[in-house]
Image 1: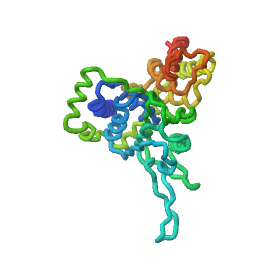
Image 2: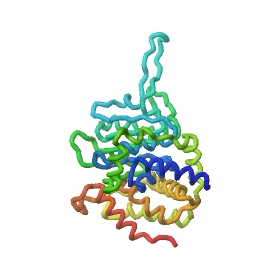
Image 3: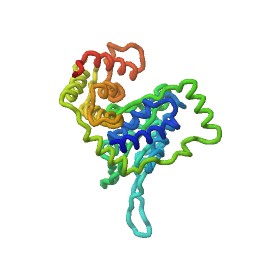
Image 4: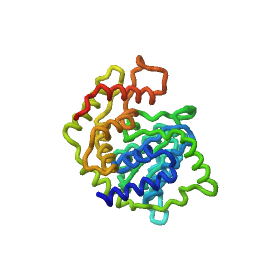
Length: 314
């Protein structure tokens, strides 16, 4: 366990050498990776969403693709397509950028729903189907998507079915003064991402993902998790509660968080800490209880109230 913890600490410190002052965001991004999930980062431009994706991919030895989503993008631009080979007189498959370990889906809400849907099968099953042929994606496989919650002109909001595929939704937030000063000094000559040296192989990430599933979750904690989920479904303030996929996401993420912190068992605080980033994008607040805040802010406030009403196991 000591060796594993050492690897994870090295991985986290490598990412934090670029993403300054955001240790909580970095840790939760690693939780998503080790739990085998996908990450949605929603924040204003320029706070490091894209940089986090680049840094995460470069910190371990893997394949990486950045896809800039635009309104004229087609599903085949992501998945790939069949191309006719004149020499062989046959069609052959040309893989798209989705065939990589880490996918940075930049400004995902700028593409049409048809193009967004091209990611659904990949995110849920780790495969894509083109012309009735199914192709397996490399493992580990993670989609890290970004979107700007402020600018809505020319965007297509992600439908609930797409949002539910993301294990977590995070916000970067602005850095404090000292961290921003460090960022300015780091960028004097070139980006610190260019100087990153991988500290782990992709096979090691797969091994860690398997080890995470061995972390013990007590029966009382499973009951606690389910009570929170049931509370979201029964709450008058919500029109849409958390799906079973959300329950599974919280369960596996709690295992990953305990693992990263050097424990082989989950504690109640693991679950409480993860409820908001895992559930907030999966629920809808009833319009009668709207406070005029952004939808995401209303959802987070509603979840905080729900958590207070659920008894924590001792």
